[in-house]
Image 1: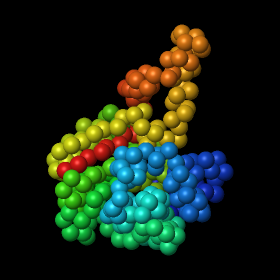
Image 2: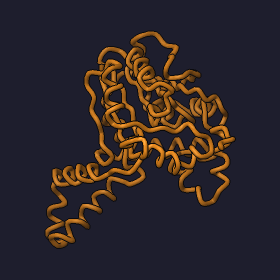
Image 3: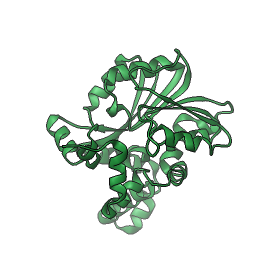
Length: 282
């Protein structure tokens, strides 16, 4: 039986030495600014910038960080010079909107404004944002479809939704296995996962006509904390066993080979709660 709030659950985790690495990987450090700086410099955020073409944008964009949590992504996005609206139902000092507001005071170029709201009822006018970014948020929506309808509504024409690191399962048995093994769910509940088809169907019905799916090993966004370099090393070692190190050193330079390798890794990735991301436009 769960008795902790989300904030209390995080505090408990921080006090357990065996969970120190998990806390760091989840960007839940006690010093939130340190976590935000680490996320800003991560391979994950570098890839996000490429997908959203943030480095090529000469204009200040309006970005909705939906399910912002402690605001680490809001900080990274705002530090590029954009105006970020950080939305979350949790107002707590440590892992909610109050933490995001503190990070906002440290941004020099862009800005962070915070709004308490649920995804299913966003207090914004139609066509407000250039980008809706949601990191590990969709599976927390009370109503997946309604939350996505709201994402579509508040996006400008040709705007982008980037929903990252969404938990995927094959069936109800996998869902139960995923929940039974999720530490924060044991403490606080609130976790969830869906079949891949359910995500895609909900996105389509909500008004997104172009939906690109990133499988578990298509992008470092999903396979973090495994780095891109580690994937390349895995491929090299696999090739070395099959054709020898000399041939492997030549073959590893072929970009198409790593792409095929990643495809097969994703295809064979079946564990409950594996991570997918979605790039969508109206």
